[in-house]
Image (cartoon, rainbow over all chains, first blue to last red; front, side, top):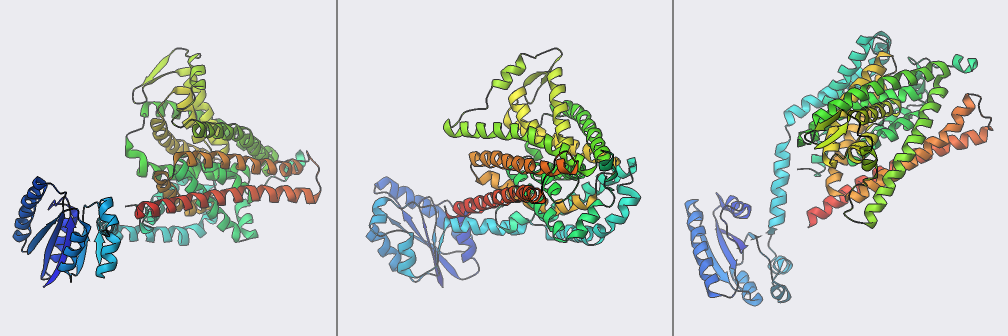
Length: 207
Length: 354
């Protein structure tokens, strides 16, 4: 059985991070081990226990084994706990902010990455990859191919014929010529505009 | 002058002749489209201030460059509406009032522009369009630069209210209330501004540069509503301009399609850039670029004067002016486009890193 270590403070089962961990664990004989960072106060620890108990039930309802540990703001204790849970196939860093003391004491993302030599997924990286996936899914490739074919026809077939058509229609100084220009321009802008609209998405500038 | 009229170029063959001189010219038109599209998407309106003189630099007669540009504007605005028009920031009533008066202005511009082309040939048309371009855009460029520098000195400063106060002195009846923009404007002022927008769009293909500031500074319309209403206007003004120039045989669709090849690629990158780049940079780029385009067009004027036998120059001087004009136009266009793309990709990379 492989293991995913999920480090979080908020522990919302419906958060993208929990859903991501669930997705990664499902169907792959993987257990999830939660590490919950809390403050020192006793009531905070007992609140975390209650939340984690609810999360455990929800993971169980999805058929996933879940166990958890609550750690106070002690960098040594935190790193030792992670070390004790190794080896793991993946460490997921959820909604968590390391305090200055924790960072100074050596408990931070870089330390986890370098010390345990295991893949670490951060909340930003997961959100980004999910956005990129959604972006790729957001392109209607079937429709885009139709527009692209239309564009090729406009530039490869229609464009060379314009010179001849100018004499007959487009530059014949008639009302029909003016109307024909408007129709061609509207159709072409629509076809070519819908072909090129994909570019910012391909360059990952747009969701 | 009679000789000059005899030199008048056949509009049916002029583009074929230009393309026949070098295949690179077609690529030049595509590049112009790309630069114009990127800047147009980035600035929100415009692009014509680069494309119209750019085509003229490649040898296209002024009237045909304007005709190609205004026809191109129609389709581009149509796509722009698809992309941005659902923001709900359009005062349709104001748009329709301005549209009716602007259409009269466009029609007048087509007649005047056509007159210069028919009577004085390509050089006469070029001279008229260039002189109009230099006069109007130097005023607009200077005002924009002044406004941008003021914003840099006084962050958060709103638009200057000098013109608004002046227009309030001309509140002749009837007064018309526009609900979405929440302003009351005199019909006389509206008529004057609409005609000016239309005439400018019909003469040099640039309408948004007067339309948006006029709505903000003269009518007191909120910036966001002015931009939305301008988009609405641009589509119909472009259609009317395309129809009018088309009916007189000045639209060569090859130029329009080549402009689209570049512009509808660039416009999307420019539009993304507006969300990522500081507004002050956008305004600075716009102002400086307009002023550089003005210098380029001013440098092209001596050549037209020489062709019309109104000025005598040595061959060396003529070619110096011609090269200078091209360097200013294409140089400033390429640098501005590069800056927009660089800032956009840099801001996106920074956003991802954060």
